[in-house]
Length: 128
Length: 236
Image (tube, rainbow over all chains, first blue to last red; front, side, top):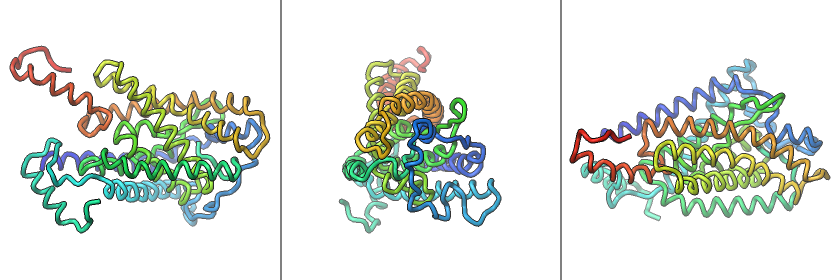
C-alpha cells in the first residue's frame, strides 16, 4: 500500500511539473523558428509549406481562440494539451498493459497482490 | 522538427504513413511486455510531460530555436515500444488540436520522431549501457549520448525523405549540411534535458525506470554482503 501511495505521489508531482511547464513556462519559450523551419527558410523551400487542415482549429498554434491575453491563451492551450495527451496516452497504455493477476513481481506484498487479483477480476475487460 | 504539409510529395507521405502505421501496430503488441499496473500510469504521464517540454523552445544561436524531441528520454523511462506509442500520441495531439506538424505529414513526423529518434536514441543507449560502468552515471552518459545523436540522425532522415520526395528542387547536399549542423546544436539541448529529467527520476524512483533494470539487479547483488557486514564499505 505504501509503495503504491508513493508512486501516486510521484506521478502527481510529475503532472504538476508538466502543467507548470506547459501552462506557465511556455510563455517564456523562444519564438524563433525551429531548426527545420530555419533550414527551410535558408535553403529556400519554406514557401512549399501548406497550411494544415487543422490550421483553423480553436487551439491552432498553441493559442485559444477568443482569449486575447497571450499569456493566458498560450497557458490554457498548454494545459489542455497536457490533459488530452495524458488521457489518450494513459488510456492506451492502460488498455495495452499486462494484468497482474498471477502475482506482482514488484516490491508489493501478498496483500497487494491479492487486491490486484481482485481488481483484475472486477474489471469487465476480458484478457486479450 | 515538426514537418508541415507540403514539404514532401504525396507518394513519400503515403510511404511514411504506411511505415508509421506498421510501427505503431507492432508497438501496440510489443508494449504489452513493458507495461504493467505500475508502469502504465507513468507512460501516460511521460507522454504528457514530453508534450509540455516540447512547448519550451530554447534559443540555438542567432534567430533559431529547438525543443526536446523526447524519444530517448521516453524510451529509457518506459521502454522503447511504449515510447513509440507515447511519442505518436504527442504528435497526433499536436497535429490535430494545435496545427503543429501537418496532417498529411503525420506519418512523416511519426517516422522521424517516434521511430527514428526512439530507435537511434534507445539503440545507442543500450549499446553504451553494455560497455559503460553499471552505475547511475554510466546510465546517464548512455542516455545523454543517445539523446544527442537521435536529433541530428532524425534531421538527416528528414533530408533523406526530402531527397526522395521533396517538392522543392534544391541540392540535397546543402540541405543536409544546414539541417545536420543546426540539429547537432539542438541535440546538445536534447541531451541536457534528457540527463536532467532522467537524473531526477532516478534519484526519486529508480525502480520505475525501464532502462535502469540492470542497476537494480546489480543493487541486489551488492546488498547481500552489506547485510552480512553492516559496517562494510558504503554502497554508492
